[in-house]
Amino acid sequence: MTRPDRYQVVQALKAAGAAALAWALTGWWLKAPMALMAPWAAVALVQGTVYRSVRTAVQLVVMIASGTLLAAGAAALTGDTMLAMVIVLPVTVLLGTCAPVGEQGLYAPTTALFVLAYGSYSPFAVGHRLLETAVGALVGIGVNALVLPPVHSVQVHRLACALPRACADLLRDMAEGTDDYDEARATGWYEGALALYRALAELRTARGWASESLRLNPGLRFRRGVRPAPPETWDSVWTRVSDRLLTLTLTLLETASDRRRLPRPPARALSGLGVLLTAAAEVCDIDRTVMERGGDGELERQRGEHLARAYEAHTDLHATLSGAEPGVTASVGSLLADTQALLDDLTPADEPGGADEPDPKRVSR
Image 1 (cartoon, one colour):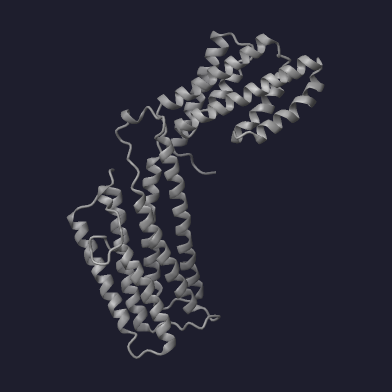
Image 2 (cartoon, rainbow, N blue to C red; image 1 turned 90 degrees about the horizontal axis):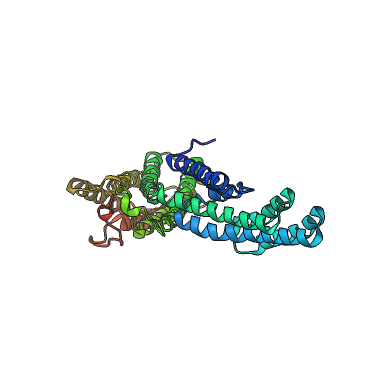
């Protein structure tokens, strides 16, 4: 079992507080005959975003009202609890399944069961049940919106910084093993490159949550520490870098496999590749630092030096093609194309040949 983070603890406490408040309002103040409905609705509506709380509230109230009214109608028509269940449960299950309400569809049949099991389906009881549900919905939305309303941009920052860190770690591991890599190690590099796409998928999901958490959120003006999400162009850059690393690791895997005819590059080429990958890893690390803490002139200078060293190593790698055998030319040529594309994507847009890279310094912390 994973340890709950601060957000999960806060939401759990808010749900408990919303349930207690809803129970107090309906059970103590309104003297409701079935006060369970209010805390039940309140807990369900402390959602991950305020917008989701409002949307879920509409769905939940519709499903509970449908289950209540259908159960009360079936009981009034049949006068028998068992027969009413046989009639109303298929209808409410189908309604909850077919209606575009997601998980809230379960509330239609469960509410119908509560109504029939308690035998409380008089007009007065039905009206009270709907009132209790409405009170619980208002309490749940109010608590989620007014007490530390959830904002998810911090998660976007964490995942955005994790991408260059993961790229740097993979590049360093590759650089350390280029001299004597085998198929098993090259397979590990390839799997590491594939893992970058999972990180990108998590980042896209987090962006969706971050965008949704800004909708209908009344607490944003009072929360000074909330970071805006980094620009989506950042994702595009690291998607391209991940593509380059995938093709590069695939080339190295093919040169290490006995089942492929692509020969291993000569030692001189692999030595130059190691230097290039080490320098590229330093560039990725600096990008991560700038995203986390902001940039300055010294970091820009260091990044330029590492990038220049990577291009110099690329030139040395190209020189190994002179007089090489056709098979070696194919393997080294593949590495040249892969690394050239990688360096192009790491080069700022204002430099010759640079990709359309965002400036992390412009991202507010």
